[in-house]
Length: 93
Image (cartoon, rainbow, N blue to C red; front, side, top):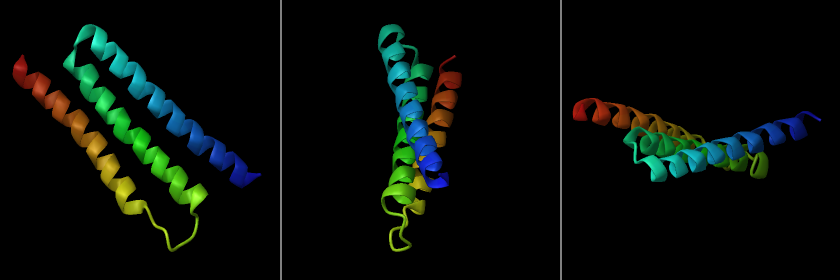
């Protein structure tokens, strides 16, 4: 039961971050607030990170396939994009 529960949690995390990215992107298209754009970009990277997590731990759980480095790089890209958005908005004001 542990494996099934973990898989459900991983998939729900992916779906939640993808839904957040979509909702933030939709709000950006309506309001054109730059911070919504950068938040959407951040959540796109987080959704990709969660998808790689599912692939790494559920689909290919073998030691030969290790997606830890791409997952870490996607996390870094997510945080970097959000920080870039914060800095860029602070410079514009």
